[in-house]
Each structure stands twice: as structure tokens, then as C-alpha cells.
Image: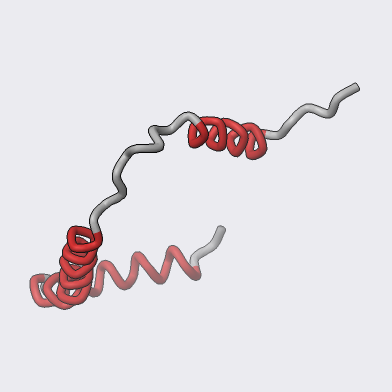
Length: 76
């Protein structure tokens, strides 16, 4: 009797079948466009946290910190 496949194996098989039927002539993203997207994402990531911290009031920052502490160290 054949052993039934688990959901991960089924998903992997489905994905592999999908890739085998994919359009082989589809063009990959050009390097120039890929580099521009990479630079834009990095720029947003570098200034995002600082900009958010600057916009928050000390009271709101304290509330966020308390919530994070409870999430990490609070009772399960």
C-alpha cells in the first residue's frame, strides 16, 4: 500500500509541475531594473525606522515598548 503524501510534499510536487509548464521564453527581469528596485528598497529601509521614531511621541514609543515587552516576556 502506498504511503500518503503530507501537505508539504504535495505542495512541492504541485509547484514543480507548475514550473515545468511555465513559459520558457518569458524574459527575466533586466539587471538594470532589478538594481534600481534593490536600491529603492534599501533606501526606504534605511530611513524608515528613523522617520517613524521621529514622528512618534515619547508616550506612544513607551506604549509600543510595553506592548513588545509583554509579547516577549508576558505569560503564555
